[in-house]
Length: 188
Image 1 (cartoon, rainbow, N blue to C red):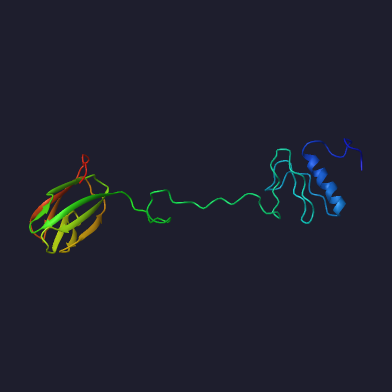
Image 2: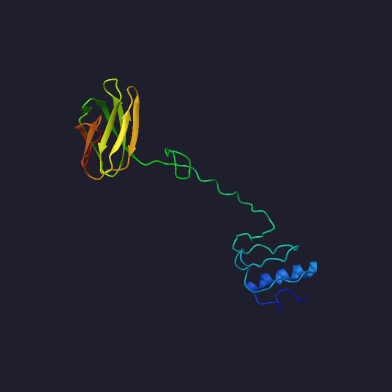
């Protein structure tokens, strides 16, 4: 071998190839190509053939990737559901629901009118006001009918309504109240 600094190889990227070639000569393996670095290595480094010592890390401070050596970095933590989100990851979350609570009795609902924001889901909360079972119907383009038990509370989620006023009927009778979807809604 020649003395340091002689005409072994030009300085720069070829130095890594020269070092790898020298290491390969000591182990009897073929030297790595002094050409461009292989995929997965830091710029200016070459990957040593399998079964030989890896070339020293580049002067950039980044270690050379070696597929035979386990990574020293910890794997990324799993994604978490943000605080306050409902359900498990995978689409079980529910959007905003605006409550609309009515007490149902023969021929009437209390309150007589509830205003909600348009296009948001509405959660109807219905209970009997007289201890008897009733049928509640919200007259939308596709009417929504809910059987209200004599005791307890029943809920039904309705997809967002277009702006407008929708009649409420009790026991399939005349209009007994109204649910209005309007931009100036302030709550139930």
